[in-house]
Length: 316
Image (cartoon, rainbow, N blue to C red):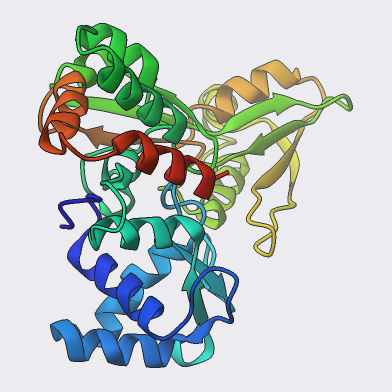
C-alpha cells in the first residue's frame, strides 16, 4: 500500500502506468490492453487479475474518490459485465493525479485510503465522506486537543458511493470495535401512490433485487390450502417496472400496490427484502480518532494543508 496515499500497490501501479503513457487529466484515454501489459511487466500481475482492480478505480459506485476516468463499457451493477480490456480505455482523474504526486513526494500525503476504505472489495474498512475526513484532518493540524468524539462527529457515518442510507452502531465503529452496517435503498411513495426504490446498496445486484421482489409477489402452489399464510407472506404487488439506467448509473424500480393495499404497507414490506437492504461487516484497525491523529503525526513536517486543498479541488 502506498505510504503517502493509502492506495494499494496494484492501484498505484495502474496510476503510474497511465501517467507514463500520457493518459493524464485532460489528455486522451489510453487502451487498457496496453495499460495492463505494462502493469504485468512492472509487477508480474496478469491482465485478467489487474483488470478487475482497474475497473473498480473507474466505477462510480465503488469508492467516493475515483482515481481513473473510464472510457467504454466498464460494466454495471446488475447482470451487465464489463467489456474485455481490449475494448476499453482509461485515463487519470484529477484525484488520481494528486495521488501520484503525493506518492512521488511532489505533494504532501493525501488521505485517499482513509476515505475510500476497502469494503468495495469485501474488506472491512468502510468509506467515509471525503469532506468529513479532510475537515477532521485539518482540525487536528490546527488544534491537536480535539477529542475522539469530536473527530468522529466531524467525519460522520460511513458514506457509500451511490447514496444509500447507512445505519448501525457508528459509536462502536468509531471506537475501533466491529459493527454491522445496514445499507438501505431509498424507498419513497410517489405522488401517484406507487412506491419507488432508488439508490440500491452498492453491494447488491439491482437485477437480482428486481427478481427477488417479483418472486415475493408470485402466487405459491400452496396458496389455496393456506390462504391466510399466503396473504401474510406474499408481497401485495400488482406490478413492477424497472426503470434503471446502466448508461446513467441510476437505480429506479417502480412498484404498483395491489388494490386495497396502502403504499405505506407495501413500502414497509419492501424494506424487509434483501437487496433493498443489505448488511456489511465493518471494522477499523483502531479508533477513528486515533487513525486521524496518527495520519497527521506520521507526516509531520510536510505541508498537509496544501495537499488536502489539492485533493479537495480534485474531487469537486
